[in-house]
Length: 387
Ligand SMILES: C[S@@+](CC[C@H](N)C(=O)[O-])C[C@H]1O[C@@H](n2cnc3c(N)ncnc32)[C@H](O)[C@@H]1O
Picture 1 (cartoon, rainbow, N blue to C red):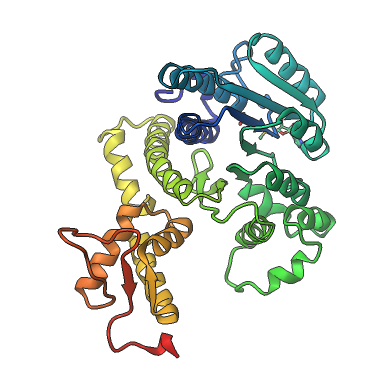
Picture 2: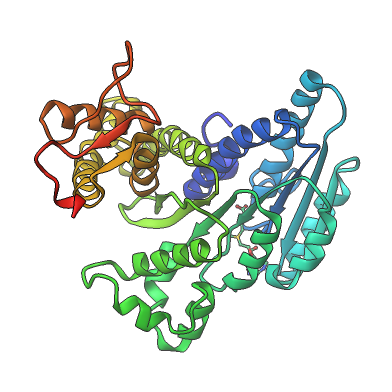
């Protein structure tokens, strides 16, 4: 994709979601297929089609994006690696009319292994697992709201392994998590029937939707389906309010690094199209280029901006006060998971803190920055973490 085409006009958040899906999936699939796996499985639990414009090709639906991309990756890897690779798609959709269109799409893709499931994702998990006897599985969970039975989904993810991408619908959650009539559904969403009492233990000044997100991440972590759950927010069209958050669940440290690298690229695209849309709506010509504004916004809220570098510094000081010493690899993962930072930003923060006597580390040979096994320690004289 090279900028949003007509199919995405007015659906810029969906475009950003699909750009992210495409870029992350591309890196993952190349790595997995080149790495010797014989099969790659793509599971789209809430597939749609949903508000698409490309009725024929479904190129603006998540499954359309995935099918087109993974077929290209398969051919690319087969040419280089030799041999045949298996690619399987399991697409599930609850709405009968969308399911019908999904089946039509699958029928038009002869030669590609696509299994369509009608009904709720949670009711189809066993059937989907049966279609995936082996291989690496990537799962996309993209509901329209909070109505998801997460414990059952976790059982599936636990059994399948692999990375998953979860779309957390911030706006819907914020609006409805205070409604007592649907409190039980939020219990299912975060896998804790007593979730309201658990949420009371979180800081009072934490936003309600972020409390729900926190509990949801706890559910994934405690059930062992992910060690790392980085996320990033996508704003609502035309306003400075969060619409949704894309969250990756992975057990692989490498997954966190790729997530932030892709995040940094995708946000540039987001800043650019938001600026162009605003200029169009206000009827003002653009005095500066959208690239100029993209770099301006990047400095305000982008990956590695000053605000996140400052927060990283605070967090590192807290960790060192508690632990006294930590290897850089572990520290960088903690920070990259929590804040929009790439590994290189964490290296720079550590170097700057060292220069100011706020922490210490020794470098080997000609190295100028810490690497994974560099031990980062509290500055000499601060030994409260030891006792
Ligand atoms: C946000 S849309 C999906 C959009 C699609 N993933 C994309 O990016 O193009 C969510 C879809 O999930 C369907 N849905 C809602 N609850 C579901 C459930 N429990 N299981 C499966 N599908 C569900 C809705 O009918 C809708 O088509």
